[in-house]
Image 1: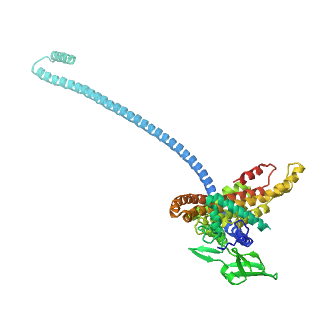
Image 2: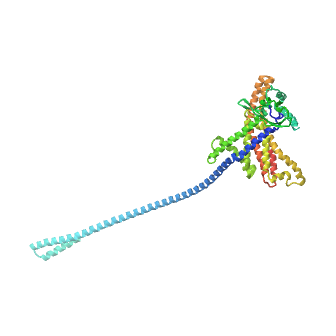
Image 3: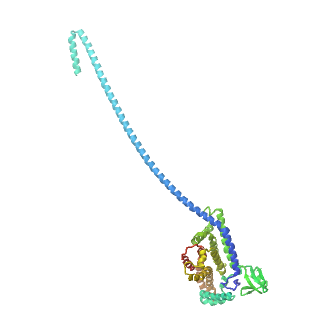
Amino acid sequence: MLYLLASGGLLSFNTGFAIWIAISLVVFLLIMMKFAMPPIMQALEGRETKIRESLEAAEVALAKAEAISKDNEKALREAESKAHQIRKEAMDDAERIRNERVAKAKDEAEQIIEQAKADIEQEKQSALVTLRKEVANLAIQSATMILDAELDVEKNQKLVDNYINDLTKN
Amino acid sequence: MIRQTMTNYLKFFYTLLFVVLLGSASSYAADAEKESDSPIDIMGTVADHDYFTFFGKKLYLPRLFLWENDLGELKFSTYSSTKKAIASGEFIDIDHVITPVTGHMVIDFSLTSHLIYFWFGLGALALLVMFAGSRYKKGIGSDTAPRGAIQNLFEIFYEFIRDEVAKPNLGDKYRTYVPYLFTMFMSIAFMNSFGLLPWAATATADITVTAVLAIFTFLVTQFSGTKDHWQHIFWFPGVPLGVKFLMIPVELIGLFTKPFALAIRLFANMMSGKIMIIAILGLIFIFNEMYGNIAAYSVSVFSVVITSILYILKLLVAILQAYIFTLLSAVFIGMAAEEHEHDHKHDEHIHADLSV
């Protein structure tokens, strides 16, 4: 068993070994400080900055999106209420127009009926007048025939007139 | 002379360690340790070696010596293994320490198992960073979300160090220190985790490694020190003149206790876990030798259960200690680099953290 410790003890300081370690450590530390670590440190710091910035940007974007969505919702609600109003107005209009039409149609129908009634009455009157004249003529003619056959035209005329007058009264 | 006192201290340390860990078996284990037929080899498992275990095979590592011969000439010799070094006739093995036959060793530059595992730690981190780097270069993770377990795991650790360790302690200047702190955290975590493998060595269970790591934090701290930092050490503001002089040694000691505590904390935590497991599993073999195999079987139940629990704890400690080392490094650097108004809250902060 060979101990390299100069006096064979555990607590002795071995100079040659220490020099080896010091040289190794100096070289290693220099490489780490100059070449190995800086790119890694930069990469990680860059990533952290990027993440932080992304998070901040995301927060801003989220706030913006929230505002937009709030606006949208408001607009939607407004549009909805407007649509509702328009529909209501349209329904009212339709109702009114329908009522108007119905009223107008009723009026027209009434007018037509009135007209028809008036026409019928008129026709009836004129028919009556014509009939009366016809009857009178027929009576006269018949009377003439009778007078021609009989006598006294005057007395008979009087009788006929009286008869017609009585007819009219009835 | 320092070495002599160190050795004395170590003897005391070992004795204490064994008494605490093995109780009545301690003297036995300590004695057995010196013999070659020891049932368990605690020191051999935690100490550094001249070989590296690879799929159960020992790969001997090259030995490099800077030594001075008796003529006073400085020589640098390299051998492919310890055996070759001894075979060359220039070196002999005295108590497991390779020594020149003539003259003395100046610095032993030999590669060791701990060094190999230290390199493994750095290498694992290098692979991870290269992998992650190529991903980010391709845009995966930089333009899109990270993909796959490895990249996500990398990001968890990286962002943890950056956001939980660097940012709160270093303020606006944190970017400069993130590579350092990340490297420290990950390499220590890798080394600690490699130590969990039964055949592997824990590089951080070596005081030399943790000391060098702590020295690095110390140097980074001092080089990023502001005027305020130095003023607090040499001319403490807001206290009477006499106290200012009193504060100089206190602050100077404080300057050095911080890295010292860093080194010892990591070392002791990693070492203790390893020794605990070896000692508890070693009980099986010790009982086998002392009381026969029936005792060993019954102890093995206890040992295995405790070891399993300890392993979970060690996994936690492996990451936790890497975190503590990195966090305290960040705290120390942050304190030195801070441009503060003269409030003294930060001092309380240090003391609170040092007790971790």
